[in-house]
Length: 382
Image 1: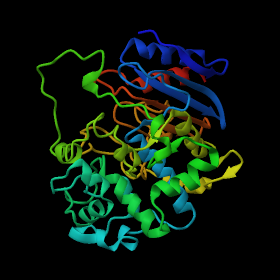
Image 2 (image 1 turned 90 degrees about the vertical axis):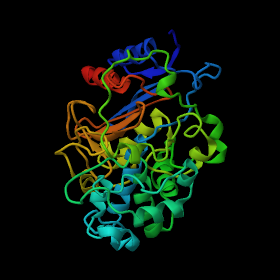
Image 3 (image 1 turned 30 degrees about the vertical axis):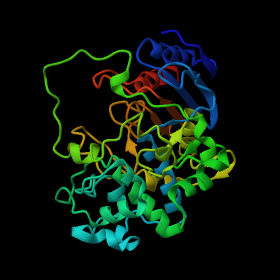
Image 4 (image 1 turned 90 degrees about the horizontal axis):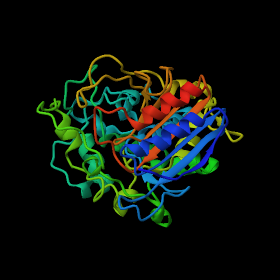
């Protein structure tokens, strides 16, 4: 598929543009890519269309749902809150949210809960998508939820429920929603186009998501059934969130579910991570101290297999740490990917920040992610 790619690439990084363009020979429909080095934008690209039919071109300011890439953006806001002395990662979460201590959860620290060690990756009660927009109901259910495994050292990915955990802490500590804090304290001061809770005025800028089953190219069928961990269903399918009908709807876009419904473009993602890649300072503003960054990215869990995904992990306090080159060769790099392929991360040693977002979700779980192709090309140019 031929597509016109727009934007700029600094000298020496032309290979990244080539790889970005080549992604349309696969399943890409609409996408954007941005990279900052030492706080300066060196790559800023976009192309394709906002919809599957190709009737609406992807624009410089197009936004798209980035699923769990939102977790990393939210974790930057958490790190700032902690650096302001308003939150302690080492404190029991019940110090801020007493009701959460029900069913044996009273000893869990804030850092453990943010690192998916809290045992509440799902809700035992049957949920509908509409329930996700009822903040009081979701936080009440999570506080009362019995852990889904024996608490200790095991971790299980909190795909959607994670968003309500720091979100409730922000409400109780600051009186503001996490989305409001993120906008006022992080995104707005640097004009980063990232939202946790999209304003009504910005809805018309959003691309629609295209599910994996709608991709132009589909993987070859196999007779080998996938191995599904026991906790997968309660985590990922209660409720089942459909990419187009649910995650591209106005109620989803306007909600503030910091685990999964951020609306952003690559430029905004790279800009926000630029704060963390440059010692906490961006555009002449001091957001967070280097010590605050170190506390927020402290490793909490790396051994064992995730009880939900069945894969390996290196988890910090809301961030994923680099593993198998996913954020380049530096394993101290940190960030988060989103379902379908979006990605944001910071590599503080290189003072580099990266953002990639798209609307066509990955169709073949065994194929190399498009973001990984771009990351590999980027580091080959450094």
